[in-house]
Length: 330
Image 1 (cartoon, rainbow, N blue to C red):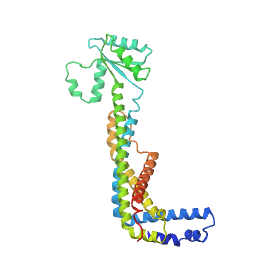
Image 2: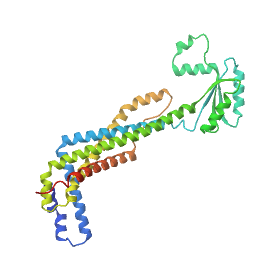
Image 3: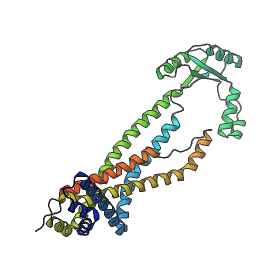
């Protein structure tokens, strides 16, 4: 830090500020910006000089930040994957086993006339078995069955996509004499959204805990840096350096720690997405979906970097305010 003081004192901005102390606010502002630039560059140079220790700190911060960032990406993809179900409930009514195909088709046409139903599609027992055979791949097992165990089904799209309206329609449908049972897809979709909401709150809580941990890590690292440079700080204060002058390089160090950890977290998240993209594509292909994994996105990535920089600044400020006042020249 003594070298920082000498560099700033011998810089053109410092000589100009010394020779034009009363020249006006513009000169003082230029001197102020030059000082911040020197402190930022010098603090980064110190971190790169001691690269191994800096990499260890960046790794701890990066892993801590990558965990909630990766969970955020998982929730974003889960929400995007399920968005097609939202507002599109589907009702399946299973008909009595002894019901003929013509009766089932007539019931489907009658339901089609209801104002509360947009579309009613009749699926016969044979068609249901063929569809199940195609999707499951159990061709030999199904061919060995003596009879078709599947009932005929009518797939219904309600005209009102609201949950309450779909439930009322479902209650009316299962009371029909031709209907044996039914299922409302909205019920398990609701469970999915409830689980997503719980997961979002859990991720938020985990983010707060890990953010506090990052602040403590940077605060402790800054405290050690202050102790290692105690003699330099005493010299600066002895020649008239202000607390703000002494504080700035440590604050910039905290910012660099935060930015480096945030950048490493982004790299870890993107690498994990690249690693998982092919298995996810194969899994969604089984369900005839062209869904692809979404990344973190530009805006969330910038927010993450800004957030980690702010965490670094907060941790450094905490350590500087606590330990700097205790150092005074003897």
